Image (cartoon, rainbow, N blue to C red; front, side):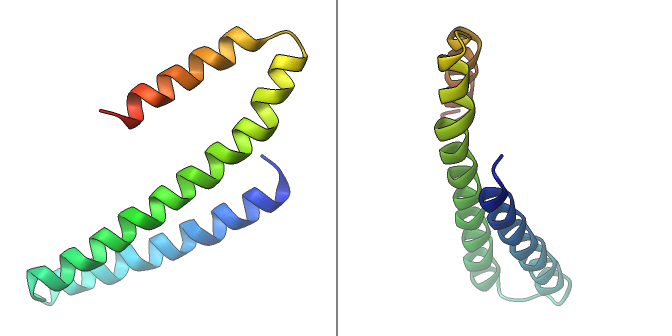
Length: 88
């Protein structure tokens, strides 16, 4: 993972961790369910952004490097596996 992607992903994960802690507090304080759900949806979107950022970096660096070095098949198999996991 390149440094820019790592920095951005770590920042986003810190945000998600803080947001999760806030949701936990909301549940402990018996906050209205709809308000809690709005926050869980925001967390899901934030995680999706982390995944997108990581996948973008993987495609631009790891996959390109593997193809250029003649090791395309294992990386393509991993991408197929990721696609299957994402669509379960």
